[in-house]
Image (cartoon, rainbow, N blue to C red; front, top):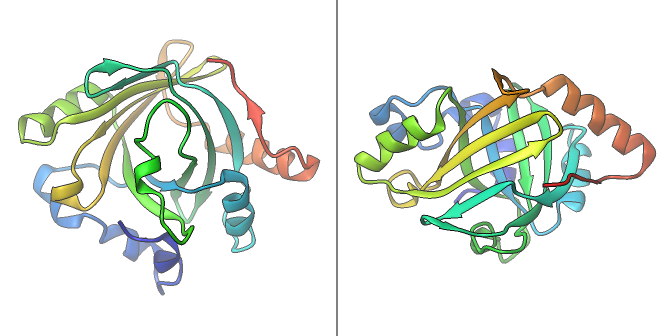
Amino acid sequence: MALLGQLLNWGDFGEAVSELARGFRDEHGLPQVHQLGLVVRDVEDAARSLEDRGVGAFFIADGPAALWREWGQERSFRGKMGLAYHQGFEFELLEPGEGSDFYRQALAPDGGIVIHHLGFLVSDVDEWAGKLAAAGSPVWVRGELEIGPMVASFAYVDTVDEAGLVIEFISWRTLGRPSRPPAGLFRLLGRLQKWSGKRSVTVPG
């Protein structure tokens, strides 16, 4: 799995992202890349480092997942994540968390920021995950996060051998209706967190 620094140092960041898992994405007709999922040891430290490079500000939250089903078995998972936007892409910082080794096993020994997965916005995560499962890439994790009236549904598919990283499908609902990620809200909250010095909020499951 590549390190984020390699992409940020590329002359054209968008072009560099477009090359990630390109053959696999073209073969399976995946939509445009929406998100870079990044595994880090400490979200707040990584956020400060990236903000110094012009990424963000990051909105950071911790709490339990409303649903975490790994290899078909229900688990209790709690973690911390940070969200920001850079040149049209969402950056998601993820700590190892508690209750699963899903993110932990991707940690870089030298503490670098690892590109763990590519995320794609879709209308139905189960439909898209099912397509890849039928092609031989099984669903690794099926989960949901709740942030107030918003619910993010997601499915991680084990495409590491075929694509070099994990593929994630994501959909959002607000008050039960399909919606898009509230990028403007996350930007505002990230700036307020950075201004206040309180870099993380706890979100109930």
